[in-house]
Length: 178
Ligand SMILES: CC(C)(COP(=O)(O)OP(=O)(O)OC[C@H]1O[C@@H](n2cnc3c(N)ncnc32)[C@H](O)[C@@H]1OP(=O)(O)O)[C@@H](O)C(=O)NCCC(=O)NCCS
Image 1 (spheres, rainbow, N blue to C red):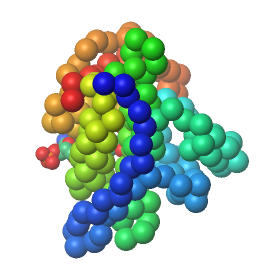
Image 2: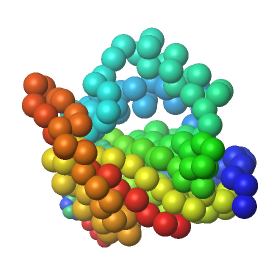
Image 3: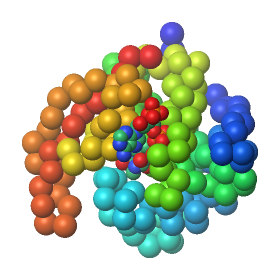
Image 4: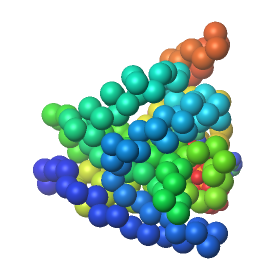
């Protein structure tokens, strides 16, 4: 089946008595997402260290326009507290997609990451993606446990792939067949 992007249909959940909406990201989300990705407990585990809002916004808007994938956010009572994206592979890897996720450090551990991933799985499957892949810092124990619980398997380790604060870290490659 050829993989083709389509609109992400928004969905609602209830979390601790609040309404959680998962929907496609829009330009106005840039500021909140920039704030979240700068938080230490989030930024430590991302590929890029934080940078200026102007640069972030530019990249974010171009990603919304041209990206060969989909970015979704989780909003709790209207406030964005997390983001996940899917990026389609190309050519002979077009049945595979990369993904990324983060949740505001004040809202981690409440099941919101699991909800975002469930929606990403459903969306990916519905457009014909067969496999999801990501890589994590080897010291990101939280994410590695999280991925394991969601059925991902470790597929390899790239030695000393990342440098953060002058220290080298391995990257752990994870994958899951949908
Ligand atoms: C990793 C991350 C996305 C998980 O999202 P989350 O909303 O905190 O996770 P959830 O609350 O949905 O947890 C889902 C499962 O993972 C497990 N889990 C999450 N955090 C855990 C922790 N600190 N220790 C043990 N298990 C944990 C939970 O037990 C839960 O399973 P359960 O529902 O059976 O109890 C989030 O912590 C995050 O944004 N981290 C920083 C950015 C990051 O590392 N992104 C990934 C880069 S590779």
